[in-house]
Image 1 (spheres, rainbow, N blue to C red):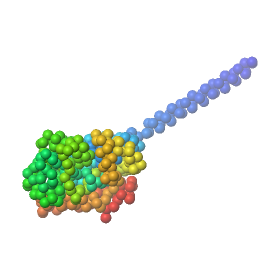
Image 2 (image 1 turned 45 degrees about the vertical axis):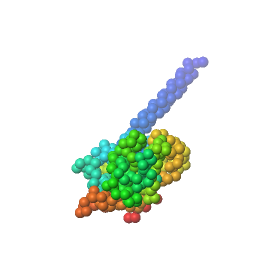
Image 3 (image 1 turned 135 degrees about the vertical axis):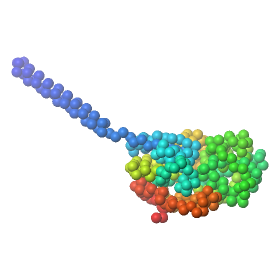
Image 4 (image 1 turned 90 degrees about the vertical axis):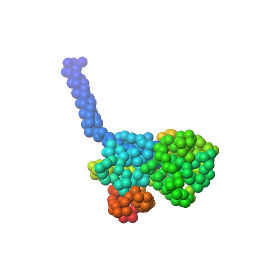
Length: 350
């Protein structure tokens, strides 16, 4: 082989090496650009409660739906929604999940979660509706066979929650003067223990705690009848300030919950299993309660009516002075995010 041929082969080899190295460099630069420009997930601090109403949240977290929406959700777990609401008023979290009664109190000014703090509370969605959550459970061996036997007995409730409102409607239903019973404040996780050790004679509890009490204590206890029942809503709330700064985050948060609710509809067994794990409840208990729960993102007329009923009750019970002018609850409703995510869930008459 002549020198010219060798030089030509060497030139071709160098050319291919150069082109290969150039390709590697371009690939590396493109990767650096893509990953460098990729946004970090947005942190959102959310207050939740160990409760079946959190089913969509549990699923969204477990299945990665929050991450798909670019959110890094930090969970703050509490024994009741009112504690999450307090953290929201303290501006330690961005979103609070809570039942309607603490919201009615906050909007009426009867519960000052933080003194001299006005975050301008906003409701941006309901997550569940059920009429089978609140239950009155009593000790047989304490002489309580019917509701009338509650007179002169100690009844445990978690004060400042929906149970307080439910107990009053229960007593009215059965014609019992509230002055004839002794109300004892017991946090929801301690209901079973307080009933078992005789600290209280009866308890107003919610699901799934109520079913677990009935199952665990067996023949020692029974549920007292109520034909009225009581509607319970589980709602997502935030502050006007946070929503104004991050309207896109509220939309993304609801989109993740919507994916979760769709998953619950198509994978009920997996949903039940996850809720049982997260709430430390038997799968059998969750299965029995399943059909009594409606999972749908909404802002409904039903919710508005329930909040108004509870404000009337607060006034009747003198928690609100007769001369106090109350703000319109409609002003606490934030529609824009849900309108984008699930417009059919908007049923409030406007």
